[in-house]
Length: 70
Image 1 (cartoon, helix red, strand yellow):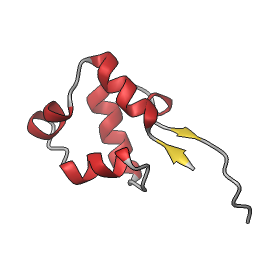
Image 2 (cartoon, one colour; image 1 turned 90 degrees about the vertical axis):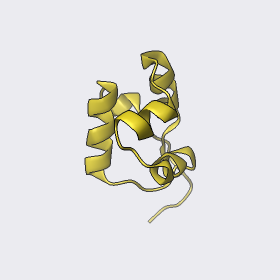
Image 3 (cartoon, one colour; image 1 turned 30 degrees about the vertical axis):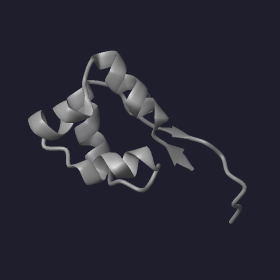
Image 4 (cartoon, one colour; image 1 turned 60 degrees about the vertical axis):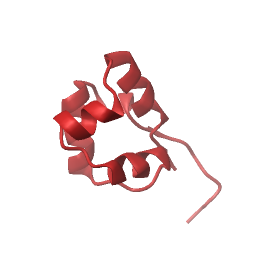
C-alpha cells in the first residue's frame, strides 16, 4: 500500500496549508481527499506536488507492505 502520511508532515514543515494548495497552486480539493484516504493518484500529480513543496518523492509518500500477495 502507498501511504501519503508524509505529505501532510512535509506540508506542515514547509508552512504550506491546504488552502494555499488550492488557491495558489490550483490543487483541487478532490485530490487532497484522495491523498487523505491513500487512494491512487497519477505520477504527474506526484511530480507537481514535489515541485510545489520543493521536496523528494519519499517526503510525500511511502510504501507499506500489505498482506495481499499476487
